[in-house]
Amino acid sequence: MNQVRYKLLVLFFIFALALAACGGGTTEESTTDTESDASTDTTTTETEPEEAEAPAEEEAASTGDRVQIRWFVGLGTGTDAQQVAVQEEVVADFNSSQDEIELIMEIVPNEAAVDALATQIASGSGPDIVGPVGWTGSNAFQGQWLDIGPYIESSGFDTSIFDPALIDSYQTEDGQVGLPFAVFPAAVYYVPAMFDELDLAYPPSNYGDMYELDGEMVEWNWDTFTEVARRMTIDINGNNSLDEGFDRTQIVQVGYSPQWQTHVNYMASYRAGATRIVAGEEGNYSLEYPAEWKEAIQWFYDGIWGEQPFIANGALSGSPEFGNGNLFNSGRAAMAITPLWYTCCLGEFRDAGLEFQAGTLPLGDDGEYHGRVDADTFRIWKGTDTPEEAFTVLTYLITNGADKLLPVYGAMPAIAEKQEPFFAVKSNDYPFVLPETWEVFKAGLAYPDAPSAEQYQPNHQESWNREQAFFDLLQNTSPEELDFDAEWAKLIEDVNVIYNR
Image (cartoon, rainbow, N blue to C red; front, side, top):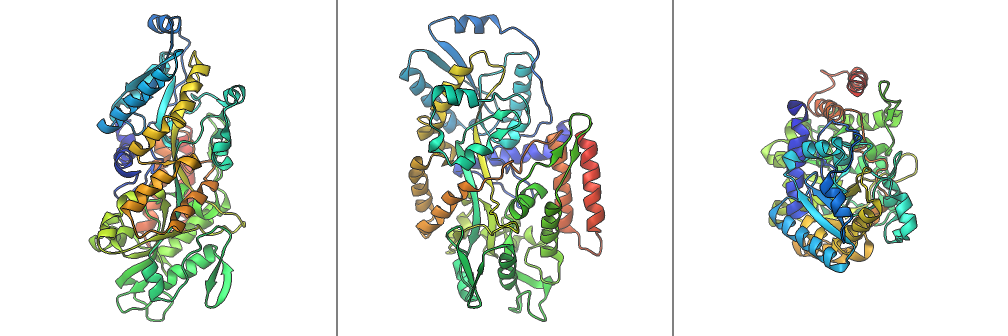
């Protein structure tokens, strides 16, 4: 199992470290983040709690002056020394704010957190609250999270502080399993100077706006995006990919980089929209990619290997000239689509005197915008003996506690009124970024991928890895050596086997 989970564990740790420093990110474009998920966990274990009485010491704690609530940290970010210190402050703040609940924090190293939590749950002594944790980390314990919908209703907690789309993204077959906390909406990053050089209009800064192309107003959809990206893919002779004589073997600039969003589920969610891909029940699960997802991945493949390319292949994007995988940061891409956490990783870009802005995502073929919002939050274990008290703690962490927690996590607050300090820090990091750019990211919260691109799949890590391997194959194999339809069918066949092991 350690070998099976290795790849995503590496990515989980990379992302957790980057999140601690600057709001997320990974280190190689050719890998998948959990990216992901702002906290990509990697286990495939689904653990049902055993019937067991609470340990004696927990019973005693609950009958004392205060109900003890255990907060498990380690499945996502939160284990960095600076983060631990701030989390301890938040615990002290909460405990001094009332006299009915005692919050106790339990820190578990990232590498041990999965097994530790699985063991606790299996013994019936799981923690009350887990987090911060993202979708993939949560999916490692599918079916173990409390439906907090009844507690939202009974407590009168005001959910209007969140974008309704974000709340809905935590509505699953198990109920309302979370509330928004730390968010990283996606947008189109672009280099204005490259657009100016070709006298092209910038991507729109408002969802719903049209785009001016060759003197005509057209929809900013994926066809327009593709056309612009092709015009901005330049070879060593200054030709773009639409020009006769374009030399695809000597590309010096690409029009588009899927910056660290290189997985089937990411790309298809952006291009065709989020959808549930798992059907059936245990023992008879099946992967059901819609036809639109296949078309989206074919579009990506053609963008690399077609007659008019606009995406770098694996070798080019991994080359030193193209940033060793951090392609947009190298200044060799006119546009990139990726979540907000990527602002962690543009230091070289900025220091080289380059500037970026952000525009809206393209309109989908169905007339809807399909975004992505990487997100971390807190979950309540469904086996808790004190769900009301746990919910009280959860709401404190995502509201009052967020004022101290989110800055040390480097995350954008889901609560609109708490966002300005976050963007003030970003403006200090990137003083050339216009206010309109930050507004684009804020607007992106209305377009989360629901269900998440990192949605639950049986044997999640292994199935995710198989999908990743297919995407890597596309990046590195030309049509002369690859039958796309055959490989797509093989991917589905292989994942179906993985699902039902």
